[in-house]
Image 1: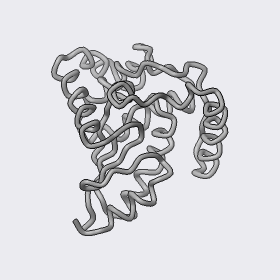
Image 2: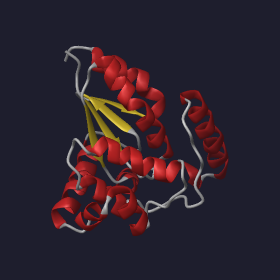
Image 3: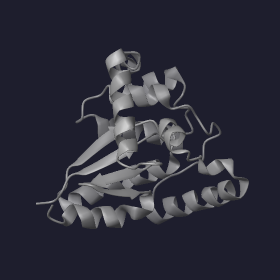
Image 4: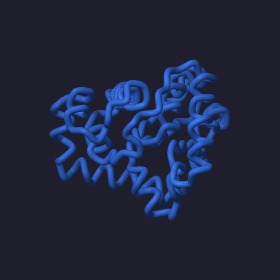
Length: 190
């Protein structure tokens, strides 16, 4: 029986966008359930002392080329947005408010809005249009705020330092370029 995959996501991460385009087929191939976990990448960076890749000019130039290479390799659309980086807090809270069954498709829609269409996920109007007015309103709910904080804290406790982060059992995998390791781990018996 395949092991579950926990997938920690933040719409602010371009590599997480790329991973979201591949996770459904990975789950289909393995039979593994994917548990989507919205978390706040900025909170992870702050807690771990990590910095966004784009803050170093040479790394930023490389990252841009690398993202387009990955998108071409995956055969998915990608357009680096004008608004980058963004504060994804409200969008991530809105996603956190959704039930587990709705979360994968809603996250994919928000990712596409940002990483393909260039729509700013920090804009409440964009969030309401993509996820719905109810999700935007729920982003202000203290219970939703606490849930997002708990997902973020749990990821940090388990060793996360960036996005996308995957866990299969106690094993952590970082980056869209580690999906083959995620797939192999999901296939193994616990």
